[in-house]
Length: 383
Image (tube, rainbow, N blue to C red):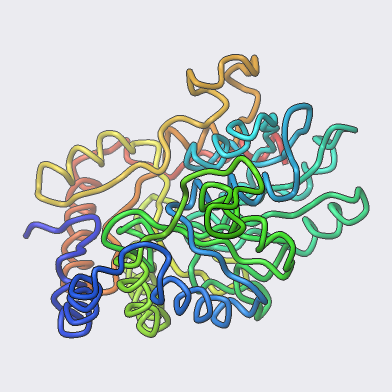
């Protein structure tokens, strides 16, 4: 049985009757940039996230960048985030001329560890940028409390957490502003690139509307030196059509995760741990094992696609060598990078497919006497 990591074809087949007419309508009207579909999506997504404003942009990366620019974060400023995320989180900081400062992650949730946050704050710190990694919200109450005491902004990277909730509140409503990605493989994905900024701050929303559209505050009136970061109508139409399905798709992901949990419990691996206070949306289902590379090959050879999110922490990427970090600086993130493996996860994933994935993993375990659970000594030493 061949099982993909993500099956976008299955999702398309389930909703093609809804998608094709709206795409055709945009094509027939030849209305492609910053039109009705973008405005309608902004209104619907703001309502969904329980915030005041939403601004469509061309990617999650751009959403993060424009939030930082709207708050005048730039050269000489520091923004705290985690090294255990996709590099776009840090690149958005760097693109603004600011410096990313890293804080290691919680050993159980993979998210920024609030107990380590305060030690990273300096007089140059302007903002904290927690990532809701893999679909699980970061522990926002202590992050917000520390940020408030130090007069810092809190900007959510919610690019993997559409529809997730923290203590009953949706991601996007937990800080000063938040960024979402509509990359095709996301829980709410377009058929190309796209993104969204959400915020309670009217001034920030208006700045971003001007920034995204080459600095135009009116036709041919360029009030600032802006950027070309517009969300196009075709992508907005697709996302708007998908939005009503998001909660049911997230429920399906949670059911799939529960089925994985029950079948994997006797294997010597670490399964995802979910905080009691959150609704995880399982953008990814990530396990940990010291035999990651061997298990990865075994699954791939038998037609089961996997992923590694992410194999090199940002502080050890060549692009950030100027920060001077060395192996050992963020030991939890580094340990995870060698052990994490993403198993197939999408709403249409069947119980039969999950059972097959686990059966193949059990075959690997029975033939590999060294297949053991991740050792916790390193993690316990740094708690």
